[in-house]
Structures are given as C-alpha cells and as structure tokens.
Length: 372
Image (tube, rainbow, N blue to C red; front, side):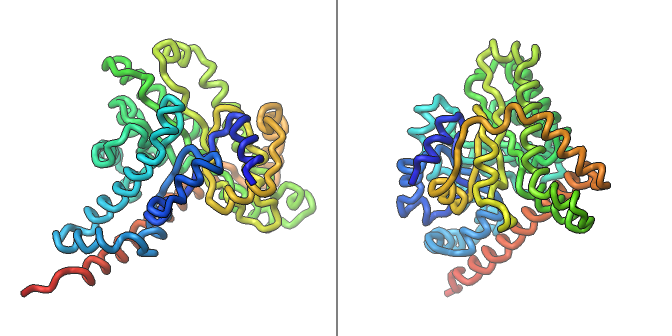
C-alpha cells in the first residue's frame, strides 16, 4: 500500500497530513500514519479544527472543565486547539529529532480574523508559540499584504513559520523576501539560524477550480483543452522562483550562517474535479526539497495507485509559462484570479472560525454548572 508514498518520500517530497483531531491522536491513528505511510508532518487550519471540534468526540471533558472555569469562547478554542497541536507535536517529536528539525512539524494558524492586521498577527504568533511550547511547531501566517511584515518580524524573533494562502507567483516572491529579511534580522540579533524553519504553502487545486470555471464559460475547444493545466503550471513556476531565490547571493550569505531554506509546500492538493485523477496534484508535483500536505483521502489514493516517476517539475518551466499565457490570451486575468482566491481563502477560514466560535459557545453554555 505504501510503495508510492515511499517513492515520493525518496524523491525528496516530505509527506504531511492535512488534518488533525483529538480522536486521530488518542486512537493511535496519527502514530500509525507516521509508522506506515511515511507521514512526517501535520498541518491544520480553521476549517479542520471546526470540523474536528464540532464533531465533538474526545472534547467533552475539556469543554466541561472550561465551562466550569467560565472562560471566554476565544480562550476555550485556543486551549483546545493548542492542546491538540501540542500532543501531535509530541507524537512527531522522533521525526523532528531524526530530521534535524526539518520535519516532524505541526502547524497552527493565527486567528483568521487578524489576517489584515500586522501588529495583532505578530502578537498572536508569539502567543501561540508560547502556548504550544514545542520546538517542532510552525505558526501559520497568511500571505496577505499585512501578513508579509508579520512574517519578517516573527522569523526575526526565532519563531518558525508556515506561510499560508499563497496563490500568486508575485506574492510568493514577496513571501520569500519576507523570510530572508526575517533571517537577516535574526542573524543581526545573534540568534541561531539553524533552529529557524519555514515552509511556504502554495495552494494548488483552487487555481484550477476558478480558472476551469472561466474556461467553461468561454466554451471553445481551445478553452476546454486548457482545463486542468493552470494550477500545475502555476505551482511549477513557483518552484522555479524558489530555485532562483535560494540560489542567489543574498541566500548564500545566510546559508553560510547555517540558515534553512524555506521549502515550498503544495497545499490544497485534494482534487476538486472528479474528471481528474485523484492523485494529480501529487504525481505531477514531485521535486526535491518540497512538502506535499494531503487530506487523508489523497494520502490513501496515492498509497493505492499513485504514479511516482521522478521529478515532474524541473524541465517544465517554458511549457508552464506558455500554458498560463494561453489562458491569459483567452481573456482570463491571472491577477484577478489569484486576488479573488486570496480574498476567498481568508473569508472561508474566517467563516469556519466563526462557526467554531458559535458551536463551542453553545457547548460551553450547555455544560455550564448550574448555580446552587
């Protein structure tokens, strides 16, 4: 079952699970995935926590204790989510140690309502790092305009970061610049750069979903022939940008100081269109030094019938540029698409967070002790 996953791992792609719940932790499922499916990391987001906590299993006792203490709903959610991340980080600690800090990581996101507030994002990142208190944590900061200076500041304080919600090549370059600026601040402050890690989460499937919808609207044979190509082209050109930035003189100076490259992470790798193979965004995004974070269904599909044939990114850059140019020639604006996806991404995470607030508040009220 795991031959394809082993081949993927052998090609230099770190396999992370895009899901977390208390049941997954306590049942031994997470440990099993690490042991048998080459999983070496975990990512979370507000939607994942909303699904896990609203499902309820495993959270009753902690919710009752929090209700007895009369904590706010915001504090309750932070206590619950950081507990899950802390426990998952402990399970992954041997992977972290064996990989010298590269993998064995668990990500937790800043409150999505702060996505456009730099100062609050910095404060929240510091608070989360303190609350989880595990060296193998990554604090997720969205790649909004307000998020960029926050990334620099947080990295500069020695806190490892997962930059999320990256859709455009231009924004990705800004993210890498923010990371390098943070490393330079950390170096100037005398911090050990070898202890600071980062990944840049470049979202994949949502690009196809939006562009394919527009191609369907055009409806010509030429438009239909381009369906399912934009997301891969976009991600592959992101890897080209990664190679360029981390082959630069600016990077060389940090490399000498034992800094770590910010690895590209392929996110949103579950296929949305049933017409496409369900391992499309795994099989066709293989290159060394990358991370692929998969929903469990995609992980199982890859284990069962993934086709890993080696590097499927390098050597595709000219073709990828032409594919995106062909989409643009049909009147589909790349800049419009990626900005829409960023805005929608923030809105969706905020909506999930608000749903989580409401359901948790209802549970706290239900479990609140009655006055004598």
